[in-house]
Length: 167
Image (cartoon, rainbow, N blue to C red; front, side, top):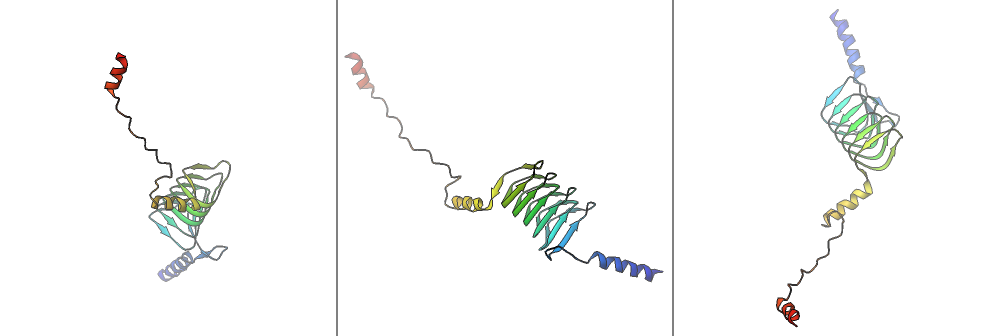
């Protein structure tokens, strides 16, 4: 009886470890709705998050499902948010759907926010980031003009004022 269980377990185990491929041929990793991960995730492929992740994610393409919730920084080529994402996003293309909720800064080349979506944070185009970094390196602060230097007022000549008053 044990050998049969062992064979059955081995079959399930090997099936569980097989890697799905996305339509682009990249490995696809899915975090199911009953899974909660605390820690960072790094992959060269695609990720679909239907559960909860507390940590940073780095991947080629990220899809946050309607039930998915991420708390952490995301770095990817493409990010689609149907669920909730609390943290910074750095991606070429970002789509926040009508059911999506993003709280945090979004650095991107292309951004689409559907009607009904929730977005709270700064939207930063990648080209703007390079310009801001160059300004900071040049020591120009935030780009605002320096106030003009005004000479202090002259002290009044009391003797001249007194002579004018006696005349």
